[in-house]
Amino acid sequence: MGSYDVKQEVTDKYSLRGRVFNRLREDILSGKYEEHEELKEVAIGEELGVSRTPVREAFRQLELEGLIQIVPNKGAYVTGITVKDVKDIYMIRSSLEGMCARLATENITNEQLEELEENVYLASFHAAKGHMEQMAELDNRFHHILYEACDSKMLQKLLQDFHQYVMRVRRKTLSTKERGMASNEEHKLIMEAIKDKNAAEAERLATLHMINAYENMVKNGLYDIYK
Image 1 (spheres, rainbow, N blue to C red):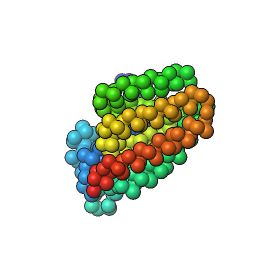
Image 2: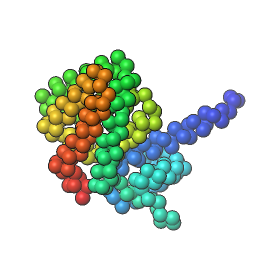
Image 3: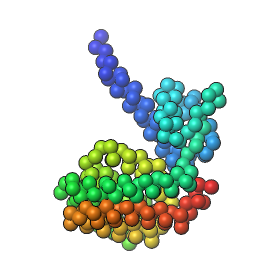
Image 4: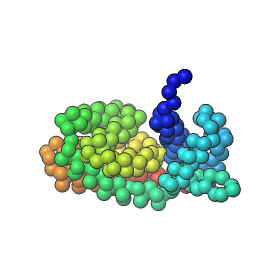
């Protein structure tokens, strides 16, 4: 018989719970589950091909993030993201993204800077062609390059989570060509400030970028999405 690896068992257990959690969080944030809808352990376990244990563990983590409410002796119910939550997230993000851009100015590598420049160039090309799906992907990648470049794993984790939380509304509002082009122009200015080693300007522009994104969401149907 082979040796029993306790460490590997623990790693596999948490990896499985993590996969279930990430899948459920994505489903909630994308709108697959309606607000107040009950999440059933058995049905989700069967759908994902797992036992009830990792589903139950994922539920606890989702409750800590405020995405579901577990009612004793009743079940788990979706709370999701409200209009106020979206506003709060963007106001918090405006400060954190500014901080991230400042840190990225100080820590970015040549390779990351080259990828930022390429990202802006490609996004400009796709915006002109009206390729909004590619624009959305490039928008995501632009921010994740900055998150990596800030060289702070704690800040990176916070920003990645906030980015994920508003995925549903971002997909809708980035689908307009006008906002796609304006957003990429804002990315270009942030990139140029970072390239010029102007940390204060990079911070100001990144903060403004988040405020502009939120105001555009309100103008283009944020409240319709979260009715």
